[in-house]
Image (cartoon, rainbow, N blue to C red; front, side):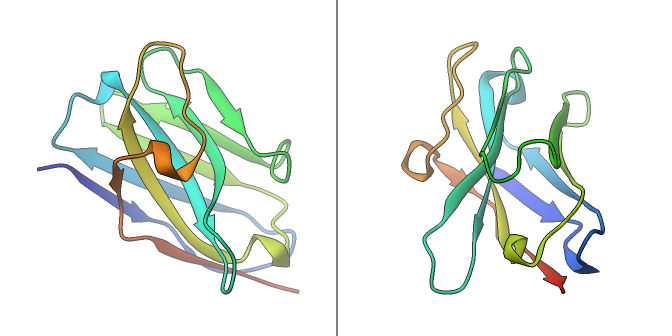
Length: 126
């Protein structure tokens, strides 16, 4: 059974940092891409950052480039999202998702991902 469990969300002031974790199990981690998505109230779910577990290729949405860093610990089958310089507009429920992918391919949109975690709330106060 595929499981994705997010943790690390919380309340932080603008300019602060958080690190989200996505612990994955139930599939061959090295064959999958893991993505972080977020959904704010009244808005569509959007891609934030994604990583190919096979070769470490990464993708970042323009809104988070230079502030967020995605990384993968394949031994622990865990993906992290380090979020620095947080802004109130980063407030959302953050989800991690997984999909099988060929080496070097990084799906970046919601419909390309097959498995989803339950989400973790990130709230940035101004």
